[in-house]
Image 1 (tube, rainbow, N blue to C red):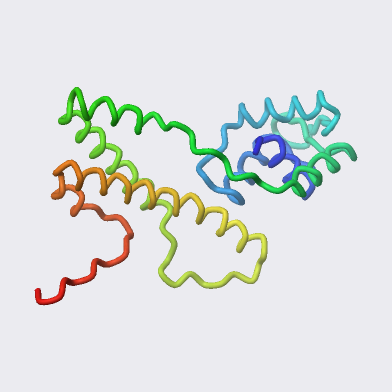
Image 2 (tube, helix red, strand yellow; image 1 turned 180 degrees about the horizontal axis):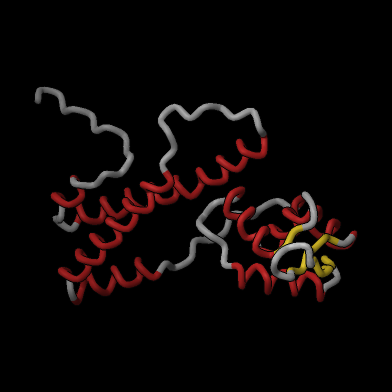
Length: 192
């Protein structure tokens, strides 16, 4: 997905300026704050391609450009929306590549990197946690927005489980057990 398509989707809800678009993307899609510079570059590109138009808005304290989708922009967005999303081939993640070589050359540094990464994922998950019994929201936009945010939480949880698995396999079990991750409770062994 390009940010341009997400911006077109936001513009179909009504005319907006760049900072408003960045805030709306963060609220509706999640995944952290959106870089307003990236949003403005995408808006300029959309305008150059004839998919959006802008006009000056001097009603605010600061002059801003307000963007609207063109008919071609609406068609582009709807065509993109209708396309099935292919399952992408997993990329070679830098952490995995480093792990392969650190495991041979410097096991202590590998474990330290995994522990650092574990702490970072625990911190990030703390911001993404949903209440245990989240109320079902009647507003479909908010409900879909929450589902969009859930994908980030689930990915963070999966990454944390992988890190804990690595630490356990590398003999750093004590740290893996200290995790604050949301995981399924372990089953008790029979006869224990």
